[in-house]
Length: 475
Picture 1 (cartoon, rainbow, N blue to C red):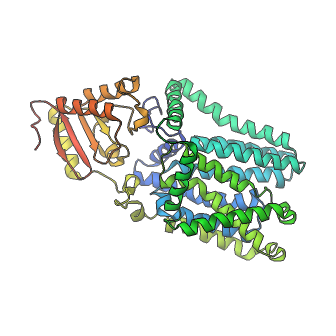
Picture 2 (cartoon, rainbow, N blue to C red):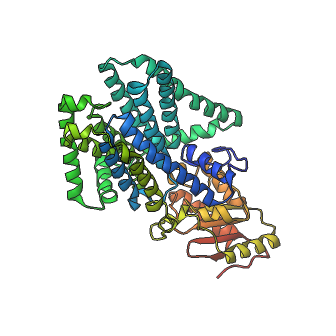
Picture 3 (cartoon, rainbow, N blue to C red):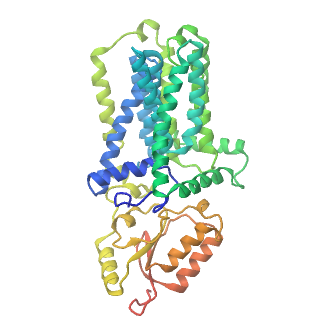
């Protein structure tokens, strides 16, 4: 829809920031097929592996050995099917720009050969920070925590903090200014303010428990998703991580060899855990932002364990080969299509082969031509196949519906959505969709019973058609 000229949030609404939609629209512009979007994601994940290595090697100052170990641990965590969840996620693009920004920051602060190179790297770090927020707004907490700790570390070492910070702010403001200008020019600024209110309401809604209880629940879900329910392994990792950070922070010789204070790791961890726990909705892919944290902790562990002489070895002959193996491993181990299309986990939603059957399409096209149908409403959450293959046009900008978007059936947004259902020609309901609250469900059910008939259903969807003399009721 965006590729066809729709304005994000004004014409098609989603609760996510714009980056993933713009990247997908770019893939669709290259070739109008889901496989094109998937290939673009492959390129992005190749870049993620490179940026993660650059974060460890350049941004944090680890030597080659710990950096490669950290990269390997990060890729293993990324490979976890309950964390990756089939891909096509905002978090994977967010950590791409997070790791790139940290690498650029480290280059600007500790390795830039000239003032011009330092300014360019700091500008790039600020731009990456903005793009990270454009991927997912929950990265704001880790951005704040990392910024404070890393800049305080610069001040302690008497580096040019003011100059670096000035260029970072400039780089951060450029994408923000461009996006705000676009929203103002297209008249979508009001819709974006609605999105911000959604995010705040999701964090503060009652019935989710105190923040402490949410944090404990978030840790519990991490044990299940990341550690596959192995509680002892999770506790061993936690205790070992605390010990490594404490020893690393206490050893001046080891600490000063790095470009960051080791105590940034638990602060970074707590910031991401708070971002996960705030809405009290826990899914495996929400732990993708922890991948750079695990890789940093692994690199720090190796850095502390290796003798100084071994840690300083420069294994130049193996650098290119090791990095190439790690990069190629991403595509072989993570992005194979059968893995992404496992219907038992619901991962088919973003797989290239998620399409409506030819029989379903033929039935809809025949009925549309006979009855003059023009539009439909997808009553679902993530039914990509419907959005790709339906020959009719969506009659609503709310393609994916979530309960917190419709807090009451009396709100302007709810009335807009209910009016779209009442005036459309077809409704396609995903059987596993999330429910929108009792008021909304009663209104939707009343409209479907009074104005529509069941045309047919499939194992995944129910197809409703407007009551006309040419459409007989279904069984």
